[in-house]
Length: 238
Image (tube, rainbow, N blue to C red; front, side):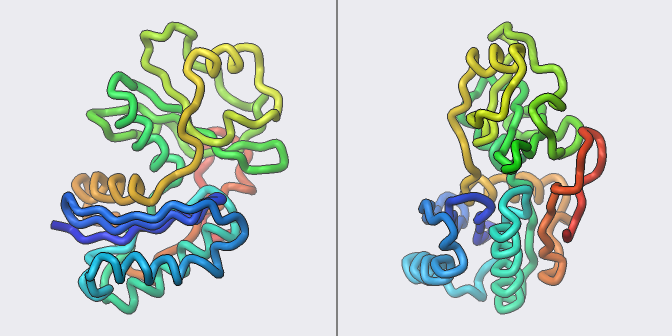
């Protein structure tokens, strides 16, 4: 068994989860601009409910971005502090891949998932994933794009198994007719990442490559604000 604490504060929700095998405890509350004040009391309450000592954790999972600059920093800082105290590693997970993980499990026929989060300033954090036995595989890189910079959408044929997730698809930033048609065919249902799916993603990543668990001092945020093309690499740390 791998005992995980997962944290996601990249959006308006303060999302926490404890997972050990089939046992899961979670908290997912809408707390816009209150993460810094509320996360530690909520975390203490969740740990108390579990009866687990923090030192029993095998790793701390955190949503490393993209998302709210402040929220990403909070998640990375809390994850680092708890991991140092528990003498365990951290596992950074992409918020976009976390949403794709949930979407792939919610839609068993999904073959691809397009994720977009609202980046404000009429821009979107975007990534596309191929679903391989429930696991979302990046197709290209995470990007910061305006709607008119989006690549060509999937065909409108429902049989292709294309799904959409994330708050970005529900903005009024001005999508092309092709994208409007694609989104009308499969309206997005998942809007913001949940910590429990960050934990599930972390376990899947660990199964593929143990090196995804890193030392606490490597708990860094990932920002995309300076990234302007679909193919460039994410900017790490600012």
